[in-house]
Length: 372
Image (cartoon, rainbow, N blue to C red; front, side, top):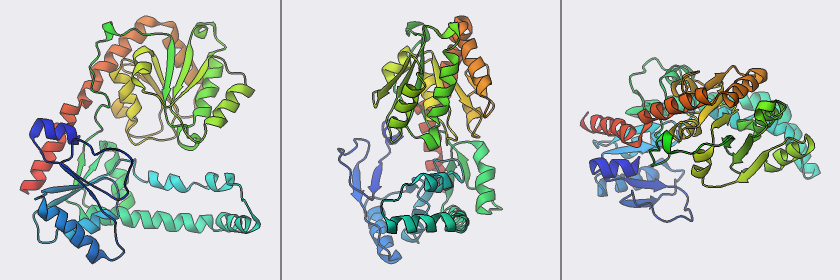
Protein backbone atom coordinates (compact mmCIF):
# COMPACT_ATOMS: atom_id res chain seq x y z
CA UNK A 1 0.00 0.00 0.00
CA UNK A 2 2.88 2.36 0.72
CA UNK A 3 4.14 1.77 -2.81
CA UNK A 4 0.69 2.39 -4.31
CA UNK A 5 0.12 5.53 -2.23
CA UNK A 6 3.50 6.87 -3.28
CA UNK A 7 3.03 6.17 -6.99
CA UNK A 8 -0.64 7.13 -7.32
CA UNK A 9 -0.93 10.08 -4.95
CA UNK A 10 2.60 11.32 -4.29
CA UNK A 11 2.39 10.47 -0.58
CA UNK A 12 5.53 10.53 1.54
CA UNK A 13 5.59 7.29 3.53
CA UNK A 14 7.83 6.53 6.50
CA UNK A 15 8.44 3.40 8.55
CA UNK A 16 9.09 3.11 12.28
CA UNK A 17 10.23 -0.34 13.40
CA UNK A 18 11.28 -1.89 16.70
CA UNK A 19 13.74 -4.59 15.63
CA UNK A 20 16.33 -4.48 12.84
CA UNK A 21 15.96 -6.94 9.97
CA UNK A 22 18.50 -8.32 7.50
CA UNK A 23 16.59 -6.82 4.59
CA UNK A 24 17.38 -3.68 2.57
CA UNK A 25 15.44 -0.45 2.99
CA UNK A 26 12.09 -0.54 1.20
CA UNK A 27 11.96 1.83 -1.76
CA UNK A 28 8.43 2.94 -0.86
CA UNK A 29 9.66 4.66 2.32
CA UNK A 30 11.35 8.06 2.35
CA UNK A 31 13.00 7.17 5.66
CA UNK A 32 12.97 4.31 8.14
CA UNK A 33 13.46 4.81 11.87
CA UNK A 34 14.61 2.29 14.46
CA UNK A 35 12.67 2.93 17.68
CA UNK A 36 13.32 1.08 20.93
CA UNK A 37 10.24 1.53 23.16
CA UNK A 38 11.11 2.51 26.71
CA UNK A 39 9.16 1.64 29.84
CA UNK A 40 8.89 5.33 30.62
CA UNK A 41 6.00 6.73 28.56
CA UNK A 42 7.45 10.26 28.52
CA UNK A 43 10.66 9.11 26.81
CA UNK A 44 8.65 7.11 24.26
CA UNK A 45 6.43 10.09 23.54
CA UNK A 46 9.31 12.48 23.00
CA UNK A 47 11.16 10.13 20.61
CA UNK A 48 8.01 9.60 18.54
CA UNK A 49 7.09 13.28 18.67
CA UNK A 50 10.50 14.26 17.30
CA UNK A 51 10.05 11.93 14.30
CA UNK A 52 6.52 13.23 13.62
CA UNK A 53 7.51 16.90 13.87
CA UNK A 54 10.78 16.72 11.90
CA UNK A 55 9.09 14.91 9.00
CA UNK A 56 5.76 16.79 9.14
CA UNK A 57 3.78 13.56 9.39
CA UNK A 58 -0.01 13.97 9.11
CA UNK A 59 -1.14 10.44 9.97
CA UNK A 60 0.35 7.52 11.87
CA UNK A 61 -0.88 4.03 10.98
CA UNK A 62 -0.38 1.65 13.91
CA UNK A 63 -0.11 -1.84 12.46
CA UNK A 64 -2.19 -3.83 14.91
CA UNK A 65 0.00 -3.32 18.01
CA UNK A 66 -2.59 -2.12 20.54
CA UNK A 67 0.05 -1.02 23.04
CA UNK A 68 1.39 1.61 20.62
CA UNK A 69 -1.87 3.52 20.14
CA UNK A 70 -1.69 5.17 23.63
CA UNK A 71 2.01 5.88 23.07
CA UNK A 72 1.35 7.71 19.82
CA UNK A 73 -1.64 9.50 21.34
CA UNK A 74 0.67 10.90 24.03
CA UNK A 75 3.27 11.78 21.37
CA UNK A 76 0.89 13.89 19.24
CA UNK A 77 -0.70 15.85 22.07
CA UNK A 78 -1.35 19.35 20.79
CA UNK A 79 -0.53 18.40 17.18
CA UNK A 80 -2.87 17.96 14.19
CA UNK A 81 -1.44 14.48 13.43
CA UNK A 82 -4.03 11.67 13.45
CA UNK A 83 -3.76 8.03 14.55
CA UNK A 84 -5.20 5.13 12.55
CA UNK A 85 -5.16 1.63 14.03
CA UNK A 86 -5.11 -1.13 11.41
CA UNK A 87 -6.25 -4.44 12.92
CA UNK A 88 -5.14 -7.31 10.69
CA UNK A 89 -6.85 -10.17 12.52
CA UNK A 90 -10.30 -11.50 13.25
CA UNK A 91 -11.36 -9.95 16.61
CA UNK A 92 -10.26 -12.03 19.62
CA UNK A 93 -8.06 -14.26 17.44
CA UNK A 94 -5.00 -13.21 19.46
CA UNK A 95 -6.30 -15.49 22.22
CA UNK A 96 -5.57 -18.52 20.02
CA UNK A 97 -1.83 -18.07 20.59
CA UNK A 98 -2.23 -19.25 24.18
CA UNK A 99 -4.27 -22.35 23.39
CA UNK A 100 -4.35 -25.12 26.00
CA UNK A 101 -3.54 -27.74 23.34
CA UNK A 102 -0.12 -26.15 22.80
CA UNK A 103 0.61 -26.28 26.53
CA UNK A 104 -0.36 -29.96 26.72
CA UNK A 105 1.85 -30.87 23.74
CA UNK A 106 4.90 -29.26 25.34
CA UNK A 107 7.59 -31.73 26.42
CA UNK A 108 9.49 -30.73 29.62
CA UNK A 109 13.28 -30.87 29.41
CA UNK A 110 14.09 -31.17 33.12
CA UNK A 111 12.52 -31.73 36.54
CA UNK A 112 12.31 -27.98 37.12
CA UNK A 113 10.83 -27.52 33.66
CA UNK A 114 8.32 -30.29 34.42
CA UNK A 115 7.22 -28.52 37.61
CA UNK A 116 6.71 -25.28 35.68
CA UNK A 117 4.75 -27.15 33.03
CA UNK A 118 2.40 -28.69 35.61
CA UNK A 119 1.90 -25.26 37.16
CA UNK A 120 0.98 -23.81 33.76
CA UNK A 121 -1.60 -26.56 33.24
CA UNK A 122 -3.15 -26.04 36.68
CA UNK A 123 -3.18 -22.26 36.35
CA UNK A 124 -4.37 -22.19 32.73
CA UNK A 125 -8.08 -21.42 33.42
CA UNK A 126 -7.11 -18.44 35.55
CA UNK A 127 -4.36 -17.17 33.24
CA UNK A 128 -6.65 -17.56 30.20
CA UNK A 129 -9.32 -15.47 31.92
CA UNK A 130 -6.78 -12.80 32.90
CA UNK A 131 -5.35 -12.75 29.38
CA UNK A 132 -8.81 -12.29 27.88
CA UNK A 133 -9.54 -9.39 30.25
CA UNK A 134 -6.19 -7.77 29.44
CA UNK A 135 -6.78 -8.13 25.71
CA UNK A 136 -10.29 -6.68 26.01
CA UNK A 137 -8.86 -3.66 27.84
CA UNK A 138 -6.16 -3.29 25.17
CA UNK A 139 -8.80 -3.33 22.42
CA UNK A 140 -10.76 -0.61 24.19
CA UNK A 141 -7.74 1.58 24.95
CA UNK A 142 -6.47 1.33 21.38
CA UNK A 143 -9.90 2.25 20.00
CA UNK A 144 -10.22 5.24 22.33
CA UNK A 145 -6.70 6.48 21.48
CA UNK A 146 -7.24 6.21 17.71
CA UNK A 147 -9.04 8.55 15.36
CA UNK A 148 -10.02 5.66 13.07
CA UNK A 149 -9.83 1.87 13.36
CA UNK A 150 -9.51 -0.09 10.11
CA UNK A 151 -10.94 -3.62 10.00
CA UNK A 152 -10.74 -6.09 7.13
CA UNK A 153 -14.47 -6.66 6.75
CA UNK A 154 -17.86 -5.37 7.88
CA UNK A 155 -18.53 -8.55 9.84
CA UNK A 156 -15.66 -7.75 12.23
CA UNK A 157 -17.21 -4.55 13.61
CA UNK A 158 -19.71 -6.23 15.93
CA UNK A 159 -17.32 -8.76 17.55
CA UNK A 160 -14.63 -6.09 17.98
CA UNK A 161 -16.99 -3.62 19.64
CA UNK A 162 -18.60 -6.30 21.84
CA UNK A 163 -15.24 -7.66 22.99
CA UNK A 164 -13.96 -4.17 23.77
CA UNK A 165 -17.22 -3.15 25.45
CA UNK A 166 -17.77 -0.22 23.07
CA UNK A 167 -20.99 1.71 22.61
CA UNK A 168 -19.63 4.02 19.92
CA UNK A 169 -18.68 2.40 16.60
CA UNK A 170 -18.23 5.57 14.54
CA UNK A 171 -14.45 5.20 14.26
CA UNK A 172 -14.59 1.91 12.35
CA UNK A 173 -13.63 1.87 8.67
CA UNK A 174 -13.60 -1.27 6.51
CA UNK A 175 -10.69 -1.71 4.08
CA UNK A 176 -9.87 -5.27 2.93
CA UNK A 177 -6.41 -6.47 1.96
CA UNK A 178 -5.35 -5.82 -1.60
CA UNK A 179 -4.18 -8.45 -4.09
CA UNK A 180 -0.69 -9.80 -3.55
CA UNK A 181 0.53 -9.96 -7.13
CA UNK A 182 1.11 -7.22 -9.65
CA UNK A 183 -0.31 -9.32 -12.47
CA UNK A 184 -3.61 -9.38 -14.35
CA UNK A 185 -3.67 -12.72 -16.18
CA UNK A 186 -6.31 -13.53 -18.76
CA UNK A 187 -7.79 -16.93 -18.15
CA UNK A 188 -7.70 -17.98 -21.80
CA UNK A 189 -3.94 -17.43 -21.78
CA UNK A 190 -3.37 -19.45 -18.62
CA UNK A 191 -2.54 -23.13 -19.03
CA UNK A 192 -4.26 -25.06 -16.25
CA UNK A 193 -3.32 -28.57 -15.14
CA UNK A 194 -4.90 -31.24 -12.96
CA UNK A 195 -3.33 -29.77 -9.86
CA UNK A 196 -4.84 -29.00 -6.47
CA UNK A 197 -2.83 -26.36 -4.62
CA UNK A 198 -2.27 -25.36 -1.00
CA UNK A 199 -0.19 -22.27 -0.21
CA UNK A 200 0.23 -22.10 3.52
CA UNK A 201 2.46 -21.94 6.54
CA UNK A 202 2.91 -25.51 7.82
CA UNK A 203 1.22 -24.88 11.16
CA UNK A 204 -1.24 -27.52 12.33
CA UNK A 205 -2.91 -25.46 15.06
CA UNK A 206 -4.07 -22.75 12.67
CA UNK A 207 -3.97 -24.28 9.19
CA UNK A 208 -5.04 -27.89 9.93
CA UNK A 209 -3.25 -29.40 6.95
CA UNK A 210 -3.66 -32.86 8.45
CA UNK A 211 -7.36 -32.38 7.68
CA UNK A 212 -6.48 -31.40 4.10
CA UNK A 213 -4.40 -34.58 3.76
CA UNK A 214 -7.25 -36.64 5.16
CA UNK A 215 -9.65 -35.18 2.59
CA UNK A 216 -7.13 -35.68 -0.20
CA UNK A 217 -6.67 -39.35 0.75
CA UNK A 218 -10.42 -39.87 0.42
CA UNK A 219 -10.61 -37.98 -2.88
CA UNK A 220 -7.80 -40.08 -4.37
CA UNK A 221 -9.86 -43.24 -3.86
CA UNK A 222 -12.10 -42.07 -6.71
CA UNK A 223 -11.19 -42.75 -10.36
CA UNK A 224 -12.00 -39.12 -11.18
CA UNK A 225 -8.90 -38.04 -9.20
CA UNK A 226 -6.51 -40.51 -10.84
CA UNK A 227 -4.45 -37.92 -12.78
CA UNK A 228 -4.64 -35.18 -10.14
CA UNK A 229 -1.81 -34.15 -7.80
CA UNK A 230 -1.69 -32.06 -4.62
CA UNK A 231 1.07 -29.46 -4.33
CA UNK A 232 1.72 -27.83 -0.94
CA UNK A 233 3.83 -24.66 -1.12
CA UNK A 234 5.17 -23.33 2.16
CA UNK A 235 7.22 -24.31 5.17
CA UNK A 236 6.89 -24.36 8.94
CA UNK A 237 7.40 -26.20 12.19
CA UNK A 238 4.99 -29.03 11.33
CA UNK A 239 6.61 -30.18 8.10
CA UNK A 240 7.82 -33.41 9.74
CA UNK A 241 4.31 -34.12 11.00
CA UNK A 242 2.91 -33.94 7.47
CA UNK A 243 5.75 -35.98 6.02
CA UNK A 244 4.99 -38.67 8.59
CA UNK A 245 1.24 -38.62 7.85
CA UNK A 246 1.85 -38.91 4.10
CA UNK A 247 4.31 -41.79 4.60
CA UNK A 248 2.43 -43.76 7.27
CA UNK A 249 -0.97 -43.46 5.61
CA UNK A 250 0.52 -43.89 2.11
CA UNK A 251 -1.32 -40.89 0.70
CA UNK A 252 -0.55 -40.71 -3.03
CA UNK A 253 0.41 -37.81 -5.28
CA UNK A 254 1.24 -35.27 -2.55
CA UNK A 255 4.28 -33.02 -2.99
CA UNK A 256 5.64 -30.77 -0.24
CA UNK A 257 7.32 -28.09 -2.32
CA UNK A 258 8.79 -26.02 0.52
CA UNK A 259 9.05 -22.24 0.53
CA UNK A 260 8.88 -21.22 -3.13
CA UNK A 261 7.58 -18.38 -5.28
CA UNK A 262 3.89 -19.37 -5.41
CA UNK A 263 3.05 -17.63 -8.70
CA UNK A 264 4.18 -20.50 -11.01
CA UNK A 265 2.10 -22.91 -8.93
CA UNK A 266 -0.98 -20.67 -9.05
CA UNK A 267 -0.57 -20.38 -12.82
CA UNK A 268 -0.84 -24.16 -13.30
CA UNK A 269 -3.26 -25.15 -10.54
CA UNK A 270 -7.00 -25.58 -11.11
CA UNK A 271 -8.32 -25.95 -7.53
CA UNK A 272 -7.15 -24.24 -4.34
CA UNK A 273 -7.61 -25.95 -0.99
CA UNK A 274 -7.93 -24.24 2.43
CA UNK A 275 -8.73 -25.98 5.72
CA UNK A 276 -7.81 -23.21 8.21
CA UNK A 277 -9.35 -23.10 11.66
CA UNK A 278 -9.67 -19.33 11.18
CA UNK A 279 -8.25 -16.52 9.09
CA UNK A 280 -8.36 -12.76 9.32
CA UNK A 281 -8.86 -12.33 5.60
CA UNK A 282 -7.58 -15.40 3.77
CA UNK A 283 -5.13 -13.65 1.48
CA UNK A 284 -4.29 -16.87 -0.35
CA UNK A 285 -7.95 -17.14 -1.39
CA UNK A 286 -7.82 -13.83 -3.26
CA UNK A 287 -4.41 -14.83 -4.65
CA UNK A 288 -5.99 -18.03 -6.00
CA UNK A 289 -8.94 -16.12 -7.46
CA UNK A 290 -6.62 -13.59 -9.05
CA UNK A 291 -4.76 -16.43 -10.79
CA UNK A 292 -7.88 -18.33 -11.91
CA UNK A 293 -7.68 -21.11 -9.32
CA UNK A 294 -11.07 -22.11 -7.87
CA UNK A 295 -10.83 -21.83 -4.05
CA UNK A 296 -12.43 -24.21 -1.55
CA UNK A 297 -12.65 -23.45 2.19
CA UNK A 298 -14.45 -24.45 5.35
CA UNK A 299 -16.91 -21.85 6.67
CA UNK A 300 -14.82 -20.99 9.74
CA UNK A 301 -14.41 -17.20 9.70
CA UNK A 302 -16.54 -14.15 9.01
CA UNK A 303 -14.62 -12.56 6.15
CA UNK A 304 -14.76 -15.73 4.02
CA UNK A 305 -18.19 -14.91 2.61
CA UNK A 306 -16.97 -11.48 1.52
CA UNK A 307 -14.39 -13.24 -0.67
CA UNK A 308 -16.23 -16.34 -1.89
CA UNK A 309 -19.76 -16.52 -3.23
CA UNK A 310 -20.49 -20.22 -2.94
CA UNK A 311 -20.92 -21.92 -6.30
CA UNK A 312 -19.94 -18.82 -8.28
CA UNK A 313 -16.28 -17.97 -7.63
CA UNK A 314 -15.42 -20.76 -5.19
CA UNK A 315 -16.84 -23.32 -2.81
CA UNK A 316 -17.74 -22.90 0.87
CA UNK A 317 -18.16 -26.08 2.90
CA UNK A 318 -19.80 -26.34 6.30
CA UNK A 319 -17.20 -26.64 9.08
CA UNK A 320 -16.36 -30.25 9.84
CA UNK A 321 -18.13 -31.66 6.79
CA UNK A 322 -15.24 -33.71 5.41
CA UNK A 323 -17.58 -35.71 3.19
CA UNK A 324 -19.04 -32.53 1.74
CA UNK A 325 -15.57 -31.15 1.03
CA UNK A 326 -14.60 -34.40 -0.71
CA UNK A 327 -17.81 -34.39 -2.77
CA UNK A 328 -17.40 -30.78 -3.93
CA UNK A 329 -13.78 -31.35 -4.92
CA UNK A 330 -14.64 -34.42 -6.99
CA UNK A 331 -17.42 -32.45 -8.69
CA UNK A 332 -14.93 -29.76 -9.71
CA UNK A 333 -12.41 -32.35 -10.89
CA UNK A 334 -14.96 -34.12 -13.07
CA UNK A 335 -16.53 -31.06 -14.71
CA UNK A 336 -14.02 -28.87 -16.53
CA UNK A 337 -16.72 -26.54 -17.90
CA UNK A 338 -18.00 -25.68 -14.42
CA UNK A 339 -14.44 -25.38 -13.14
CA UNK A 340 -13.43 -22.97 -15.90
CA UNK A 341 -16.58 -20.87 -15.48
CA UNK A 342 -15.95 -20.55 -11.73
CA UNK A 343 -12.29 -19.70 -12.41
CA UNK A 344 -13.31 -16.86 -14.72
CA UNK A 345 -15.79 -15.59 -12.13
CA UNK A 346 -13.06 -15.77 -9.50
CA UNK A 347 -10.68 -13.69 -11.59
CA UNK A 348 -13.37 -11.10 -12.25
CA UNK A 349 -14.38 -10.84 -8.58
CA UNK A 350 -10.76 -10.46 -7.47
CA UNK A 351 -10.48 -7.15 -9.34
CA UNK A 352 -12.35 -5.34 -6.54
CA UNK A 353 -9.26 -5.98 -4.41
CA UNK A 354 -6.79 -4.52 -6.91
CA UNK A 355 -3.99 -2.45 -5.33
CA UNK A 356 -5.35 0.64 -7.12
CA UNK A 357 -8.82 0.29 -5.56
CA UNK A 358 -7.55 -0.54 -2.07
CA UNK A 359 -5.03 2.32 -2.23
CA UNK A 360 -7.89 4.64 -3.18
CA UNK A 361 -9.80 3.60 -0.03
CA UNK A 362 -6.73 4.25 2.10
CA UNK A 363 -6.06 7.61 0.46
CA UNK A 364 -9.61 8.79 1.05
CA UNK A 365 -9.32 7.78 4.71
CA UNK A 366 -5.96 9.53 5.12
CA UNK A 367 -7.26 12.74 3.51
CA UNK A 368 -10.42 12.66 5.63
CA UNK A 369 -8.38 12.09 8.79
CA UNK A 370 -5.90 14.84 7.98
CA UNK A 371 -8.63 17.38 7.27
CA UNK A 372 -10.80 16.54 10.30
